[in-house]
Length: 325
Image (cartoon, rainbow, N blue to C red; front, side, top):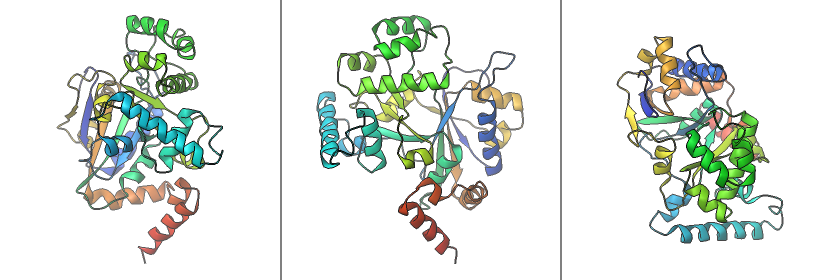
């Protein structure tokens, strides 16, 4: 891949063991800064049972993007108010952002799209439907989301941003690296402002295409799945458009890498360049790899009863065992 600008790449996985090693390499190296200045930032992952599926939210699939932003925001607000009302006070202690996260995990269509910090958990979700010819895992740098990308833009944004966001960004105007816990607080502040509907919401919608949110009070499923969420800042804009534009991809889309993962993996310097110079990957797996991928998950003890810490997880695992008899 060489040195490129901000781009996403589609890579064909031809060896499941190498993919697992690739993910381990990312996790191992992402906190290091190398002699030539390259650094590996934190990455997040999403699995999909069909690699042909686009990236969309449940809200977008239900309502499309033909209505105005104001209309869609009003629908979102009504759904949130109804959830609070029908929960008989159980949701009253949640912020609007936390409420949306809980709604998402219990099946309500929201603007949120699920990601996880754990690559093997994303692989688990990619293996939940055997009907398709290929399955996929998306890998995305998390540091650029909710951020302002050059010093001049960040300076201007800091002057206009909400207080909580302004205080954090003013500490790192000349750096794209922000301490993880501090960055998560930035994410929460930004996302909270985006769905508040206030004046700051309009300012931030004009500044960033994609928001990331990690709840401060995750429910047991979110915690077990190490979950977090991406969302388009504008409900009238398709999520995939926001995703492609979040860090100014040069072609607003993913380029297909002609070399399979096994070739890229041969040269560690090429591998490092590939990770450091790309903002996102889409890994495509052939259907023939499902059995081997499931074997890796068993070896890593990624089990339904752990990812769904309730009767649903127990039922999934029992059903899985029954199919082996």
